[in-house]
Image 1 (spheres, rainbow, N blue to C red):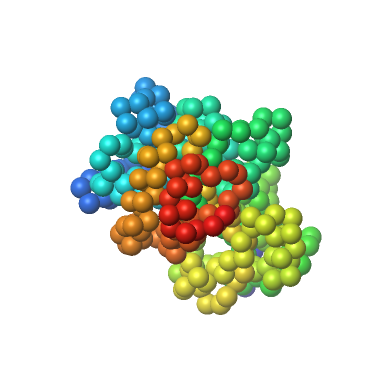
Image 2: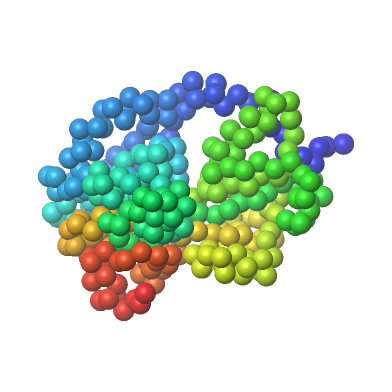
Amino acid sequence: MASSRLSTGHHTNYLDLLSQGLSIKVEFPNQTAVIPIKKNLLLGFLLLPFCAAAASGADNRYSIHTSGLNSSVYVNMLYFANLVNQYATDFTLVTLPSEGGPSNMISVNDGHASFGTSTAESVKEAYDGTGEFEGRAQRRIRHVASFGFSLMFIYAHPDSNIQSITDLKGRKIVYGGGTGSALLGKQILDVYGITEIDAVFSIARLPVPAYSEMVKRQTLKIIPLDSARIQELQKRSPLYLDVDIKTYYPEYPRSARAVGLPGPLIARDDVSPNVVYQMLKIIYSRMAELQKMNDGFRGESPATGLRGLAIPLHTGAEKFFTEFGATK
């Protein structure tokens, strides 16, 4: 009988995959970037002088701190910057890898990056000086616009008898900050001799190719949240969104409600208002082009740009959204 639990993967050693030189390939109209993941550290040292110049707009270059080289948000913002750079006449955006959301808030606040990506909840905590930013409020960060969002994926083996969150009581669960965290969690269980788990909780920025593949192969079952519990979560934080997994993974056989978090792009308060305004004008006027290139911007428009607004708007963004007629 087939197991209804998720195997921790005895047949795949992810450290071996990394040692073999795992890479990502990003194709643009005029260039292709193939970035070996195993060279992250070397790339970081090589980029240090360039990052310093791009942080505050030196030579009209403005940096965007994203996440790891193999993350969806990094790839999404490569496409974002490439589109802007095709049409901007007096500035250039530079997309850079980073340690992710919380560190991006600090880098932008301290002037080491012009822009940064994160989740709305993390941005709010950073500005207010709460949560992991307790006593370290990042008061110079400003909301530019929200692009895409992260989803909390809760899934089990397709043959599992788990049908709802309440069925998880007493089960073995892996919590991960993303697909990489989930894989690491499985490996930790493996070294403790726990070879199978019942469910995975994982936050990941859309699109997630690994989940697309699992949906296509029907190797996972999404455990849905019910509307009443999502509303309860939204009372704790109005930044949470009620999202149907099937909207983003149409091959999934049924509707499955999940919680999403908007993904704001933030800037420091002294980044040129004209740069922010022109950047938004280019992106939104050519959003159809961006959506054809990258699925991470599906459904985005000026009407969604203030989604997840939890801190003051950047003055350049305020000018753009006021002209568009969007309200806070």
